[in-house]
Image 1 (cartoon, helix red, strand yellow):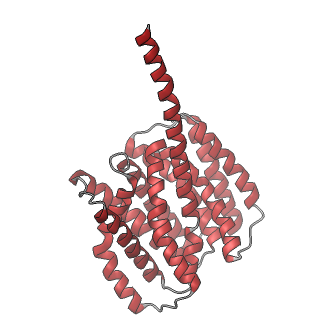
Image 2 (cartoon, rainbow, N blue to C red):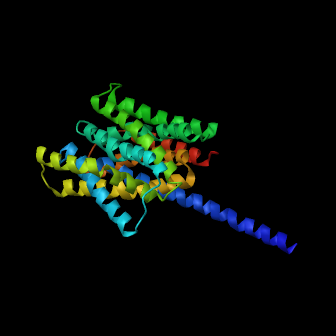
Image 3 (tube, one colour):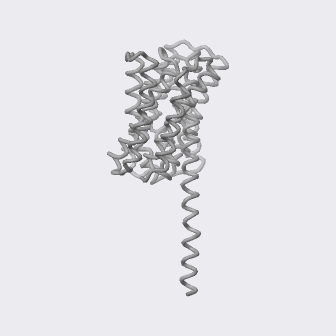
Length: 305
């Protein structure tokens, strides 16, 4: 009886700990979303003083220096050979592809418009994750995810009049390649700490980003201002490194599909930042979309899977 009571007590203790772990994972993923929501406004600031190729290359180099310094200081061993292919996908999607395509889009698109188009990223990530990892979220999850995506699409169509622009094509390409990077990064974060996933991906890109940065800085004009420097530092340290650390840790804790749906809030946060930091006009449909999306987030987080 005493042994049975001890076992029962152990079970009672373990369950809340697991619940707390999931809650902390959700918090980490949410912090990543907040960091990412500042990426477009920071990029717009950065473009005030840097060309698009310079901004993307320099942000990657700065982030790689930070990550490489951490890896060296902590004497982290090289990843196992089986992980390098996955790290290459993360590097291509998150370090290179998404920043470059969205930066090109922001040359002609407002941050508000770009934010709502990229609002399709959660659904895209959930779909690729299911294909890649074999996860099977519930029907309730998919229904809420599709509803949230539909709200974002409706907002985009209402704002653009239904016409696709070159910037939209850049953004749709960014969706696919970033979703692949998120999916692979979330998978790898189950085998190594999340900060090491993005850290090694950044270091892996240095043989390409360092020479590109050197060439771009000589080919494109540079005008250092408070905005341009602040924007560059944020996209390098905040979006490209710190944000991805907590994001991948959150995905490893609560799963890629559920974590991805937290990003439904990212376009709405970016809308707030675009008004507060850039002085852009807030579309009238934004509050309606915000309410719909927040309801969808709540449903996906409670749904099984």
